[in-house]
Length: 639
Image (tube, rainbow, N blue to C red):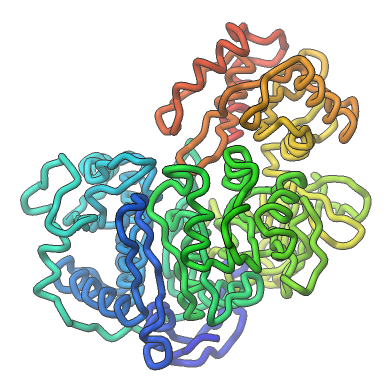
């Protein structure tokens, strides 16, 4: 499916296990595979429909030829003006506008390793990643629309540069794209000799081209930093050949992208889903994608359905969090809109069966197939999923492993948990695959310790069978070979020695008709060690009542057992959430345990914390023999 400037000599090189090398001896360029090779046949085909958040602003449709032109011009700018060369690193702090994929592909064209920092992250978070990657150039944007407001994004650049400097990394140049060329959306001053507007530099490079730089298959394409809030950022390094091959193949076989599809992935390119399944996978296949700027629920919850109708979206890809929000805000979904979905994909976390059924029945009209994918930042692409029109779908289950992927569930002592037993364990992958991360940037020891040390049979072995990959997720394998993910290992609540998945508890809550969202957190208990505390928010038109609370409690006991009975069920107006829609269980666990909530400035709705605190009560310290430090550490682990 790819074009190689030099064929590979070996598919998998295990000589430095567990540092896997794929397609060694081969050379290629990711930008060429996403752009150049499509020009003859698809030059006038739309690559991206860019949709501004403001409905009054017209959408922009970029053809493959136009994207090729803009990528080349910016690549020459990066080389001639910013001085970037093959092997250098560059950091992007860009939101969801066309300038982000353009910048990524321009860097890839030069063989420059790019590191995109999610646009919603702070300047400090960006600066820490600049320092870790050793980037000397920062590419940012002046401002963008978010939930009806204009965000001053350039203001983060000064903080990022100063943070990086304190950590020992100097930034030579800050390149600032403007959302509207010639017009400033930021109040932050430009620093002379460091900051430059891209739209003022580009005229000197108008019409220029740069040949795509052939890079070795195992050369890094990008760094993707995990989003944990504690500890040093973890830069997952992904290769060029193995990664591009894997996301191209899985985009074809799981997303089933065809020549006439209109594909909309609602993820942010700042996360791995956007890298793999908005940029590199779809563009490698020559697909047409939707690129949306802001909050899909703005100005109202019907926006996704209006947009899907007007653009003719056929493949719709989003997260369970977004699906729950859509279900909560507009239970009737796209009814009344002429949507034509043939495939629905979900990604990022386990989806509760009740939410899955709403997605299938209401959004898909009972006609569209659902692929409930499981994978991680580290894996590069999908690992488990049903294939559309091939495998039976199973609500609440990610499905079987993809071809070439061989999972196993291991217990704490490394023993295999037989399928069909109903017992949860640690999900591991027996074998390497092309999309897997190469290492943690600058920290190979951490890479081995994090993913391979725990279940390694023979340290020093060059046989891949001795290096099962520890995913960090808990799972149950059914008798049918389908895998049900119960959440991160840290998301397991141990009640009197029993492992209860937070997602299992939350799924039980969502079977109650009135419940829109649910979160399960551990509450310290002097007898059982931990017991669940449950938080739920209700659908529009539903009111809090003792009857609703009792329904939630009985649903948990009935579906899981008395051991899972919650200590409290709190009905709250809304959950504390990040800008990406993730419920911050850390904050809820802190409130339950009378602990400090920590930094809540990254929440999109920090005001709800005090409202929930009043619902919970004053939060007196729990009566437990465990130290306060142990409780606080467990609360932090929930992030």
